[in-house]
Amino acid sequence: MVIDKIKKVNKQEKQEKNEKASDMMIGKWIKCDNCKQILYKEEVHNNFSVCPNCGKHFRISSRRRIKQIADEGTFEEIGAEVETQDPLNFDGYLKKIETLREKTKINEAVKCGTCEINGEKAVLAVMDSNFMMGSMGSCVGERITLAIEKSIELKLPLVIFCVSGGARMQEGIISLMQMAKTSAALAKHNKAGLLYISILTDPTTGGVTASFASLGDVILSEPNALIGFAGPRVIEQTINQKLPEGFQRSEFLLEHGFIDKIVERKDMKETLYKIIKLHKKEVK
Image 1 (cartoon, rainbow, N blue to C red):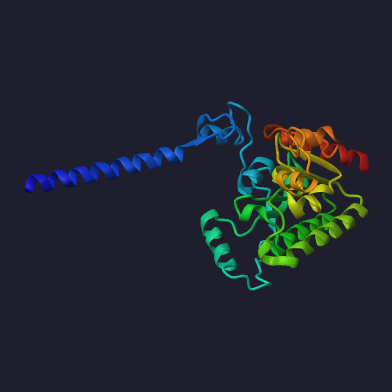
Image 2 (cartoon, one colour; image 1 turned 180 degrees about the vertical axis):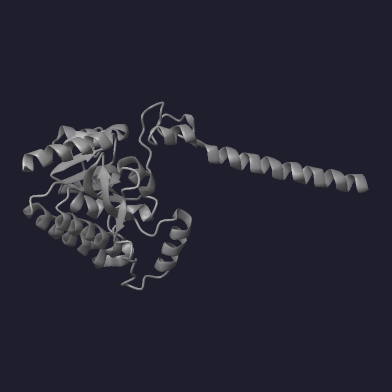
């Protein structure tokens, strides 16, 4: 009887040990949903979060993006004090926001600040798909507007990395007003003769595409990024036509003149530096 109890305890300890080992494996490996290969996560991170097998660009956090683009120690945040609002008293909205903050360790879907890119000063805004799929509410719109205004104030080029599922439904018409707000701020930015570079990443859709994402002086994109307003299925059902192969992907949009260049993530920082440097010379 005692032996049976010892066996039971040993079996339970072994099971717990196996579960921990399994959890460690899950944490260290990632599956590419494009080529279906199992990849060592650290290797993917060291490769700019790009699959070393097929070149798929994985979605990345705003923190990782800033680390890749901004010179070390130069990023100074703008608009961190702007908090998410609940103008419609939408049931469970603020609770969901709080849960996401604990899970992602970020407080909203965009991070903005001043920085240097290979020594060139710029204002940088980076959207984050980990936070409500980068949806644009009043807080996101306000932070981006503050970044635009800071760019005008300091006479610096503006760089925005866009990723979004569109306007934030929990804020209703207030979220849609951010389209006009950011676009009006960019009109002032343009009038001041300043450079705005928009980078479209996977996915950039809805109200973000219909506003500041499409207003860049130079519009770049990562490979195979989904870019559009409504989804392909909705468009097919609306026009009752079969859409072309690769519709709404960055390669299709480059071919049709919507974007200026597709840039791989490893080359993005250098490309931004060269564009900023070139524009600086032209202004002089």
